Length: 123
Image (cartoon, rainbow, N blue to C red; front, side, top):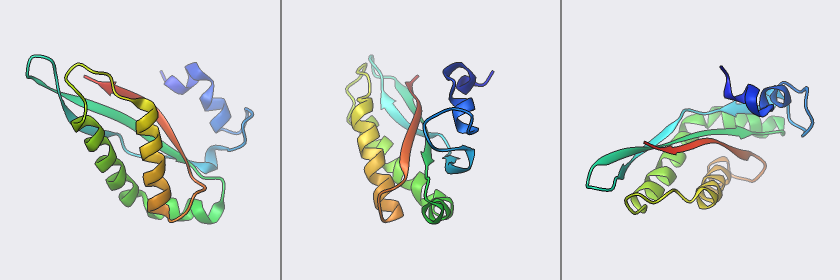
């Protein structure tokens, strides 16, 4: 089952819902992972699903061409966030989103691409 069906996002991404962008403006990126410390000294994995919505056609082309650079920037942000977590503490999703958006803008050279977060999970 597609989780987007549950949230009604699939319809919006296909252009059937409100909110502006359509399927052509959304680009899903690879899942980003980083190691975290767990309570008791074990290790775990922090997983973050990301994507970008880019309404501007020229910037969308740049985002598609810069996908490897975006993934690299996102990896650095998630690794930094994971390494700063105390064992057993939840991730600060607001800060993570803000840092990932800044990495998006910096990598693409200007604002205009909106970072979309999926699941942020520690297992």
